[in-house]
Length: 325
Image (cartoon, rainbow, N blue to C red; front, side, top):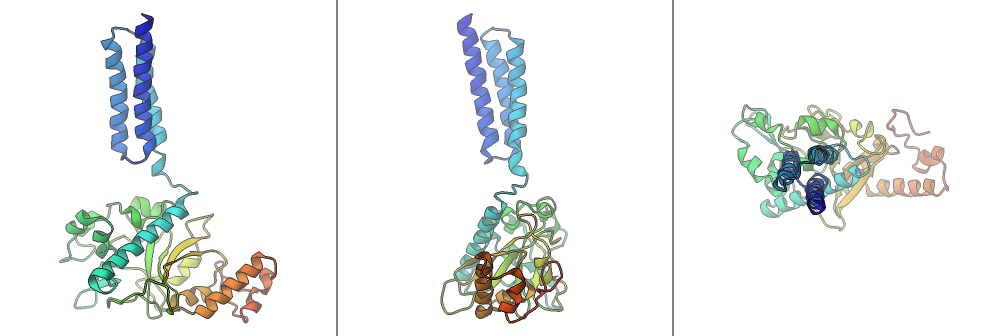
C-alpha cells in the first residue's frame, strides 16, 4: 500500500511539473495552456484509479493545482513595464531588417503608402513589409484591389502583428492598432507615395529618423497614416504628438530608429521640437550640439537653465508646452 501511495504522489508530481512547464514557457498560445491543464487533471485522476487507490484529496489536488499554474502562466499577455523598451528595440530592429530586405529586392524602400489614380491613400507600407516579417499568410489574404478599409481587408484588423505593437501600448494590443509610424512629409527622408532609396550603413550621410514609436495612435496597422513633419500634417499625425507622451518609464520615452548606421534613438522628456526637427532633416551639427549639452548636464557642468544658452538661445518648445529658459 505504501508503494502504491508513493507511486501516486510521483505521478501527480509529474503531471503538475508538465502543466507548470507548459504554463511558464510563454512559447505557446493560451489554448494550449488549457489543454495542458485539462490533460494534467484528467491524467492524474485516471492514473490514480488505475492503481486502484481511492484518494479524494490527491484527485482534487490533481484537478485544482493546474488551474493555478495556468492562471499564473497567463502573465505574458500582460504589459511588461520593465522589458517593454527592450521589446520595442527588437521590434524596430526587425522592421528595419524587413526594410533592408525589401530594398535589396526592389532597389528602394517601400512607398509609405500606395495611392489610387485620384490620390486617395489605399495601402500602407506596413502591409507591404508583411512577407519580410514572416506574415506571408496574412499578406496573401490582403486584397490590393480594394482600400485598406474595404470589406475583406477589415477582417484583418484584428490580426495581431506583434512586431507593430509595443507591449505597453494597450490601445494597439487590444484594437489592432500600430505603435510604430513612419516619419513622413516634405522635410523627412521617407515621404509620400514615391519610393526612395535609403543608405543603411555609416558614411557621410546625416542621421535621420525613419520610424518612431508613439502610444495610442488610433491608427490601424493596415491604415496608410503616419507621423508628418509638415505644418499641414493631415491626415497624418503631427510630430508634436511625439513629445507629448511615451510608452516607457512613466510615459516619457519613445523609441525610434534613424539611418544610416542603423541608429537607435530614445526620445525622452528633455527633447524639444528643435531637436526633433534636427533628427528629421538630418542637421548633424545641431544633433551633436544637443548631445554635448546633455552630457555636460549629466556631469553637472551645466545647469538645466543654461541649456538654451548653450544651444544659442533656440528657446524650443518642450513636452509640457513651455519654452526652454
